[in-house]
Length: 400
Image 1 (tube, rainbow, N blue to C red):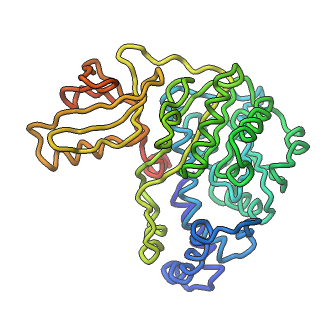
Image 2: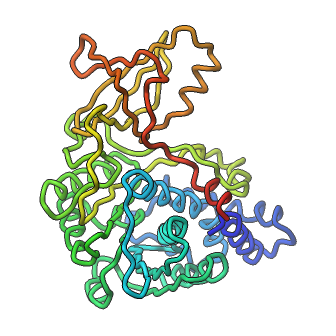
Image 3: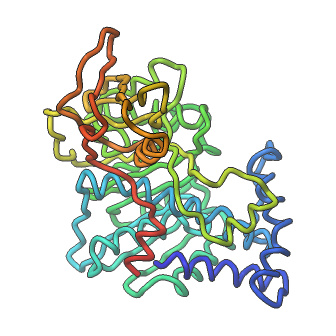
């Protein structure tokens, strides 16, 4: 799925809804709808039922141009670590089909991102995508996007249903290789125990090698709720953790109750989104979200020596050193510093930009310092990258 084709799809929607003569005029005319929807998602969130923006052509186009790309790439990031670092691959059915279930799909950014990622690793497979959402208009748009922008060998089934009462719809489905719920559960569950119980019910919907991915906003409440639920689930034989943490050990950040674990990832926004944001002044340079990826099968173990660690903060340039926080594959939180003596300001900036929160590294020269759980790596070249995120939009453009 080419992001350029997706962007063109939504610009066409904007032209149709505004009657604009060209793309630039359409973007100018759709900007008030983007502002309205952005406020609705943030500062003016309703106390009750969230309004169905998919019924309003202008709001639908505004969502597609501003929010769809962000959710699409967030889902790609959540899938990237299990697939590219931990080696998750679904085994197709006997008929060569990989089945994906998108819960609370909306217009489909997460489900279509999953289909796109699967197609990239195995172009020969057929993908059966099932999308459940309460909004028929959003589901109709999802089907249109798939028809107009996705290559062949993708089938779409949709059903309008409330996720809280979806048992009958789920019972009709065969077992799924991948289940993804993107930003759909935070409105449904008020505590981590009910979220945990709901996730538990999805286990029987997965194939023996199946993967379940839940994405949530990066807010303290939603992120910690998801972390509590995930930690509880991987403490039982029901699920194993594939991402973002490196093991089934409890999250040490959650135990401290000071910060909360979430992703902050740089990306390349579409030009139309950047244009719309010129007068909105939203921070679109990074994507913030929380997620968990749980599997039925256990991932292959990571090497024990040197111990891998996952960055949970950026590399912060301080006087004469970088400092960052990480969590090891054993579930221990550590602080690491790396001297920057002899490096110019531009070299320091360049080196810091190469690492992002969520990247995985190891070093055979990790030296304990005086303080507990504090370590030093003598030079940054001795921090070996094991996994780094690559911008999904660029990767897709190269492959298309």
